[in-house]
Image 1 (spheres, rainbow, N blue to C red):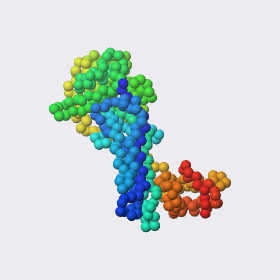
Image 2: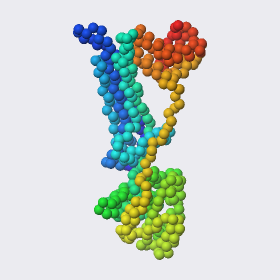
Image 3: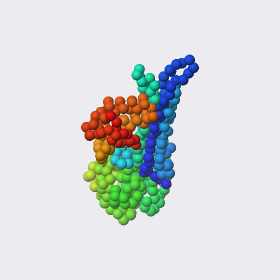
Image 4: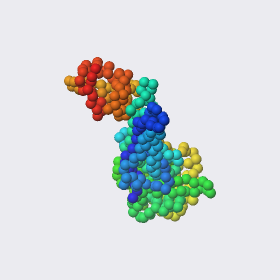
Length: 423
């Protein structure tokens, strides 16, 4: 089964927590804090693997999570950084944010791409020692890693794409030009999956061609099989548009040609502007008038015309050189750059917060930086609470609460915690 679209959830590892520890050794008086830092959480990395040709593996596994960083230890021992989670995908896979549709990454090159970054490790209590606070009983917790809900779309990387109605001879042509062996039969839709073939022009000159399943009218809106595979044509630098010039299927060649081009426009206007070579296939069973009529029409439109018979090998020997020559005039395959998505507008400043009065005697404070400090504090330790109190004061939180009319013994909500306000 050919799977070219998949949806998965990925989560980078969380950073390890900082350690609260004090040096305890014989003959060492008042050794002081020696808690180490936590390790970084693992990144989630995607890498192209040429041994894969489908996204089938992602149909059975939908969640990928990297390891968390190791917590810090005593004696200022830092926790181990978690290894990256490497996800192998077929070359040409496009990673899209499932919510916004923004491009996260294009896995087309040889270098691994970081999709989600692991969280930074927390600080140990050794970082918080000062002349006046010589025994801090708190540490920084690790930061959470990034999480993403993404959609994977496989867009095959091929220099040349073979397009056209079903039964016009695309599979026969690619089997003649390359070592690919697609299914060939005398009925429509014999090709159910894209077929790739390497076409050699000389001893060291070659290009990759893709046989795209047949398109029909309405393919861009879901009709037939072509809609599922039109995305694979998007990277092609050159299109070989096959037309049954003999009309053996009872259709008009010119109408077929215009219908397929209309579907390309509907799917992607940029794709419709891609360079085309129109191949008049089955010319061995067509009349000279049919071939000349199509030639005149196509050349008037500005396309290159070439008459062939894939089954009889007529005109196919010279075709690779023609295609290769045209490819040298064209830019490299399409690469999709990550879409810049502006981050949600944060509250101004690194210590931004919001405070509001919910009801009489109840106030709520929202401040991520303050919640992280609180998570790393020992609420049963007086010195630790004093440190937290100073952060409230220096960050302007207490001033804001006073502006809102807070009074003694009122309730303050911060994350999952409740505090009683005392002067």
